[in-house]
Length: 411
Image (cartoon, rainbow, N blue to C red; front, side, top):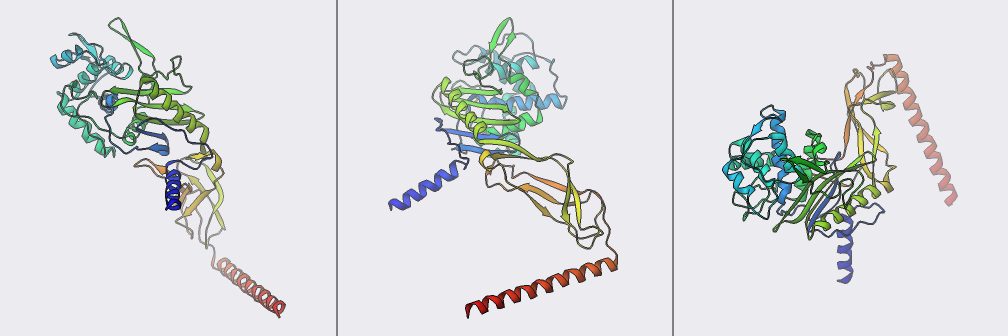
């Protein structure tokens, strides 16, 4: 029984921590995840699919939808907006983060920045009302978008992330670390300019300085090289949470920690994840976009024996530094002539037994033929067929002779 228990524990450890040669850190958070932002590869996780209150990390979806309205030209950054009575009441609520807004006009950009940088709840609700007419209608849009993004374990109840006792709507927001990582990757891919906002240490509004709640930015207490920011969160139900985006040596990592026990702990545990990620993994670009790979595609019945191929995109992978010498694998769907130029002839990928976020998979790139190739002439094909047949006969004779010699040796 003891041996079975040890075996089960060994299997559990192998599935929880990648075989990197680098010791995985002990993370003091109820749920966490570390993932590559480009490939979606999960580098480390624990309880990442458990739904928990995300606190102000909720605002990521709120602000994503605002940014999308800007992109669709349904809002402008300089558009003037005025807080409703509900927002003004929220702005007077003690114990929560707020601007606080006053009964005056603000711009969409001011509220967007305030919601990100200071995590202002009144700014988030004000933007939600501006987009949808009411926060309740906006929350419906939040949930619809979450489903579209594959965030199947997310349920939004309000636009701010506040617990129900302080929020302007009933109910509790619930998200998983996996879903938060998915949303962040989608956000920075669709609107990379968001990082220009999240990397700011402070902003000015109404003559006051609003400080960023992310203390891992440059010159802050827990400054971390390469930190580009993202979103903190804290409520009584959620504990202290943080999702970060950090870039070093051409690799961008996303971390999420949920329900840590203090403001310092969320940054300390994030540092552990980032240190591990950058020490144990590295990005490799096996082939660039449009790169020509010579003499790799075997073609039967053609005027040439092998054909050059061209990559549709770059083959970028995140690998353990201990296993960075893996060879790419080619899978060809077309191996007989004729072949037209730029015809899809297969794919190339690097074998990887790691785990990926929903919607991601082991990186794979399409291959196109670099040139056209025609069928070889009938005489050429006959000569090749005769040569191949002759070689097979010769090999068979040699194999038979070897077997006979071995038999004589036994006697």
